[in-house]
Amino acid sequence: MATILTTNFCIMLDNYKDIIDLPYPRDDWNFLMKHPRMSIANRAKIFSPFAALRGHNEKIAETAEQHLDATRDENKWEEMDC
Image (cartoon, rainbow, N blue to C red; front, side, top):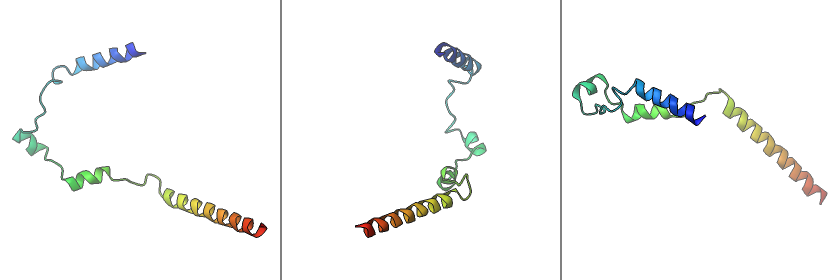
C-alpha cells in the first residue's frame, strides 16, 4: 500500500516539476493587482462557524432541558423517600 502511495505521489510531482520550485510571487506588484490581499475581517468570515443543520442547536438545548427536568424530578422523589 505504501509503495502505491509513494508511486502516485512521484507521478503527481512529475506532473508539476516545471513549477514546483518557483518562488511564490508575494512581492510582485502585478500579482498583487490581480490578487489583492483579503482584509482580516473578510478572512474571519470565511472561518466563522456556520449552522450546517438548521435547528440542531435548539434541539440539543431542548433535549438537555428535558434531561435536566427528569433529573430534578428523580431527585425530588428520592428526597421524598427518605
